[in-house]
Image (tube, rainbow, N blue to C red; front, top):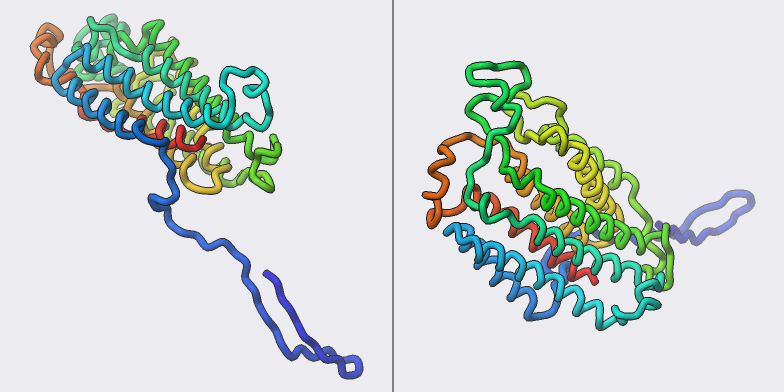
Length: 333
């Protein structure tokens, strides 16, 4: 706020005659389509097409289509990001890749690369593709008719075996590296890493937004029961004990990424991309570790072919959020 005062001095008395107020404040406006930038055609259209075919494959339990179109959709956002980045720097030059002025671009591209690797690793095996959720080992050892505090109700079952496979763990690691890459990219435009390529002046981190986002993430994790030591009746998730350390690290990494995007973005694109990414991860977690009702016996699982893969509708919502997030992040380059 600037105040200009024209005054007259009469003896020792200061008499203001004209007062002018000039408010120099940036007015808030809700996000609109103009606040978001997508990669150049044909990548958004190609990704949308592959995503539609992926959902159609899941709806008909077509394994080859599900795996193939998932990879193609992921390659769309990767190629889109690489294409945009290559117009700004030589991606084959080590000097360009290590130039501090290119930290943001390189960080986003690395995030896209690790994401594609994670997508491939998280493709379920053909044997488990149309299987219904399996009961956990602890459930089978307790026997029927026995209930203990914190034990799983008999009509609830654990996730598919793929959620504990080496491929799934490697996929989680790849996505954790993607989130770390995005986080470093967001920080590269702040006062922590000022360069000539940073905004002028570099963006100040809004620590209040950062703290509130971390708090929200912690409360959400607790409410969903992702890291509870024991399963309680009505819980949303039941993460196997041996998977809890890995899941805890992953949750911390993605919450920090979302908090960093929220606290550093001067617009809306990073924020939207980061939050959509976290939302999509909730659907992945629900499919992998969610407590589900055992509505059919496993010997009927093969009858589902042609009637849709279990949980395909909820998974489709997660994919829409995920691919929208990646396109928004690729558009930040």
